[in-house]
Amino acid sequence: MIERMPTVAVSTFRRKTRAYLKLAEDHPILITRYGKPAFVLMSVNHYEHITSLDTK
Picture 1: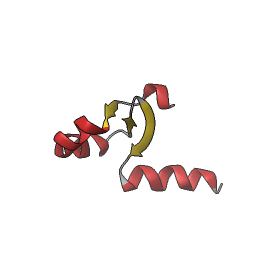
Picture 2: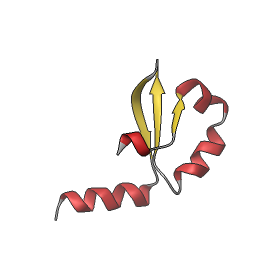
Picture 3: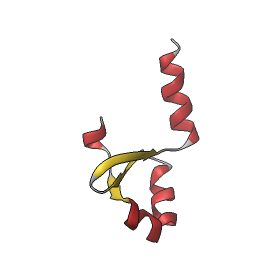
Picture 4: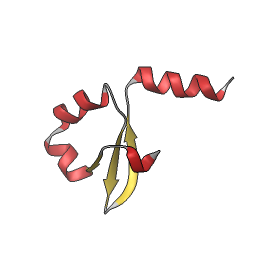
């Protein structure tokens, strides 16, 4: 799943935070640090959806 996510370096994310927050409303975003996956940014709705799948 990580391979299919939009990906952005943390330095770019800092410069364009507003744009990536808007994008994260519809799709999780993988944020990399030094070229390696470090964080995933997603909406609360998406987070609640995936955590509810874990409890079923």
